[in-house]
Image (tube, rainbow, N blue to C red; front, top):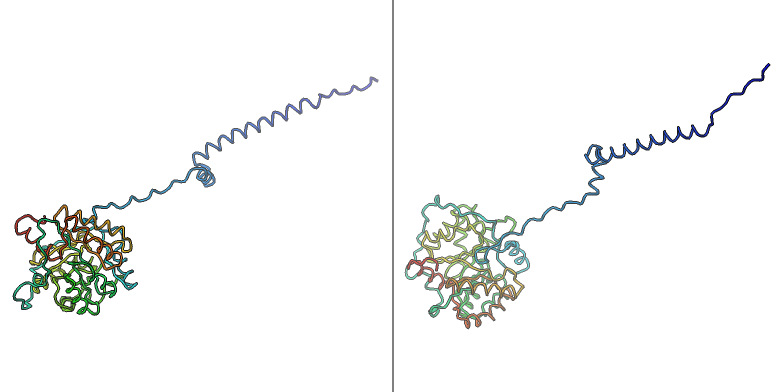
Length: 375
């Protein structure tokens, strides 16, 4: 027998290595292709939330643009940007007083539906009280006139004394609900100042209290008349009234028509503090034949800042220089009184005339009668 031939075996190492390399290569190619596909799908937002969150985390965050600052006009033709009524309430709570804020811009109110202004018979004879009680001043002789009205007099007795001690003629507007009015108004009259009555009127904000017997547009006519009469009878010898707050009430045609009728019957003037841009006071005063003026500049929007008060006084001078007269309203804060004490001789040296409010009202009436309007 022939011996059995043994089988020849292929070399093990070479073929196995080639097969492993082929498989590994295919796996690598698959991974590369899958990676590229994943990147493309992720960028297209097709991988769902995880892909989107990853992209958001890498992208810079967009910032919300801030609102542009409010547009402001000249001070004598606009109102302060801050809330004056809130300032008023805060200072009164601290035992002092300030004035109020204007409402948002509003268009002129329609007066076509307001009936003829009723003028009650108050038995007025002789000269008009606004002229009879006016402080006499020398003719301005062409010098620009400036009237300074200090509101809220009497609420703080110490500040009232400081205001009364100022060189005159200032126009001091005493709060209707202040105590000791007879004594203070007599001292003011002896000091050469003209007197007015500061009447609380309804503000826009229902959370701010203007004081007792406030004139509000929601009141029945009888009660509104009674409240107005209460204030007008508090003392004698004043030339007229101006509004304390009143950003809502001075925009009420019905309410202001009643006020103007009473002022006409009593021979008094009205000064609009201009706490509402849509105030109807001027148009109704003209319709009723009530002597009238309005505030140009608030002096102490920043009641403790002497430099700010001085700037407002400079602005007031500019208004007077341009138009021939100007009306500034301030309050008997220590900084305001100190600024006015220094300013009076300086403004007179610069060629301005310090006058009471009645002189400005008379000047406006003369301009209207001569056909020159408001100067």
